[in-house]
Length: 81
Image 1 (cartoon, rainbow, N blue to C red):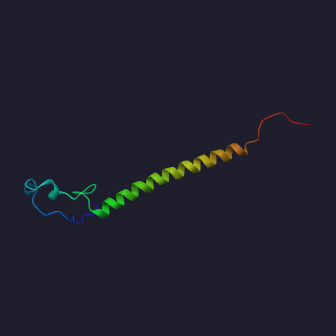
Image 2 (cartoon, rainbow, N blue to C red; image 1 turned 120 degrees about the horizontal axis):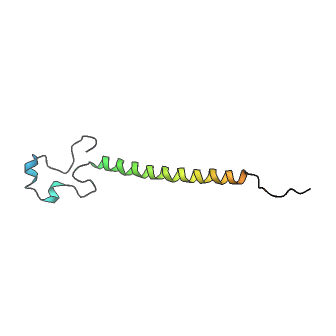
Image 3 (cartoon, one colour; image 1 turned 30 degrees about the vertical axis):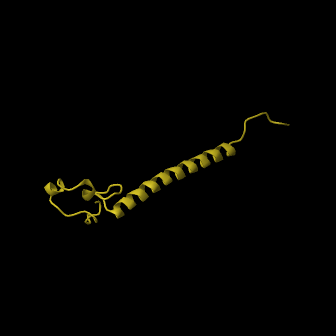
């Protein structure tokens, strides 16, 4: 995985010995099952979620700033005497 820890639920075999195993024995039934541990998958999911949230926050703040700019501009029109 990303952390370098041993993957739980998988046998430690030589690469050639993995060929003789069934697919369910070579991997764990989860996203990134045979290559990442559960902690790494969790951190990847959280990181992706927070990045998307940051994009949404940035967009909302940009809309808020642009609306404030529009409100603060003086309206052009005829002057009343």
